[in-house]
View 1: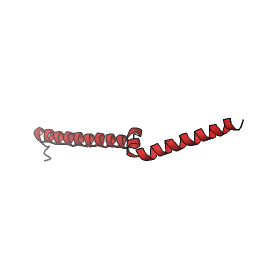
View 2 (view 1 turned 30 degrees about the horizontal axis):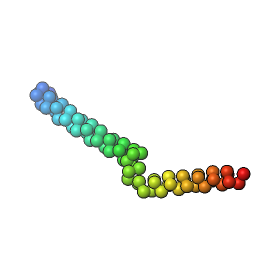
View 3 (view 1 turned 90 degrees about the vertical axis):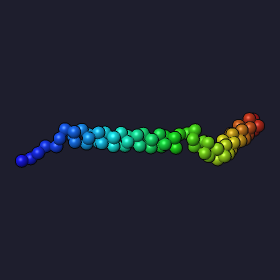
Amino acid sequence: MNASPSPEFLEQLAAEQRDRIHHTALELISKVDDAKQQLSLEHNVRKYFLAVSLIACSIAFLSGYVFGELFASR
């Protein structure tokens, strides 16, 4: 005869599967949050503040120089 598993055993298996799924979902949420933080503009500007500020200063200086030359030549 083919004996089916007891309801208590099946409930225990279902509870274990729910716990695994819950744990996996929490891990996934955590990893997505970490990835969002790593890709955020604010995080990258803070991480590379010197490079960003040097680029911004260079652009501002060159823009001022170009506009100054345009108005000085007239």
